[in-house]
Length: 358
Ligand SMILES: NC(=O)c1ccc[n+]([C@@H]2O[C@H](COP(=O)([O-])OP(=O)(O)OC[C@H]3O[C@@H](n4cnc5c(N)ncnc54)[C@H](O)[C@@H]3O)[C@@H](O)[C@H]2O)c1
Ligand SMILES: [Zn+2]
Image (cartoon, rainbow, N blue to C red; front, side, top):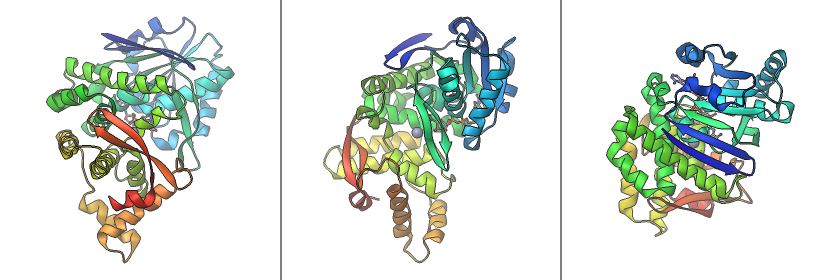
């Protein structure tokens, strides 16, 4: 078991890796515990929480809404939650974001904790204090910065997670290593298969080290003014790809491709050696992630863009999606590049310059 503690302006979090999910009461403050999970997670893992109350939420991004938050408020009221209660999300990033936001705003904030059950939530989403919901088609537009009291990573929960979802989490892990920990990157190069097959020592070390990278960055910049932007490595192009493919390219795959584009730009700008960009590509391939768009996806985009040449059609669609990025400031994007494996740098770039490398 490993423990990490984060002391932030918006609260303190104890992260316990390798703990059993059923130990939730040990970490809550002693009052009423209300667990929030979706139907699938309840069916798979609900029996681990004997005697604790469970509130169900919907599944998927469509459930990450203010309406779901209202439903949760209603349940909290019905169950008589007070400031001594503890709300615990058990599930992926969606359950954590949604329940975290509801708890952080109900009664101006009741205590909350997470039992993340996807690799992405364990290695990334459950830590950092951001929570919230989607609004009018914009992801995570409404939310707060507030830290969970505890995060329990029970790796046994991942045994029921389908392989493609393990790869989604791996994409974010490779991101964390690439921006902040060269040793972790080497470890993933040597142990990718062991992590994906949940070999206990390998997964525990990898998730732990990813959380150390995220924690360091978040502590330096809790409310996303500078340093925290590094966590967006691969995400600017990634989000654009997700958007134009209308969800056909998953988040993890889109980010994998986005990281390769960012690495290519880093090499072209003379910031990083080609061999480091090659290492990134190789590791993504090892994890079964794409490094460029496949022909089928490109075909769908071509249809959208009409008469344009294939490559131009892709490029225009990606640039157009980036133009609408809500993080765009005066025509410039804060683009995350690499100076080497484990070392990221945020650079202001115009769309035209990014376009040259697509
Ligand atoms: N707050 C943050 O800092 C942060 C960071 C990254 C991502 N996110 C958010 O996280 C969300 C994505 O999270 P996600 O990838 O975990 O997806 P998710 O929460 O949608 O979960 C994926 C699916 O897997 C199922 N599932 C969960 N655990 C399972 C298990 N152990 N076995 C089998 N099935 C299981 C769920 O029912 C769900 O259908 C996005 O909404 C994203 O915005 C937030
Ligand atoms: Zn991501």
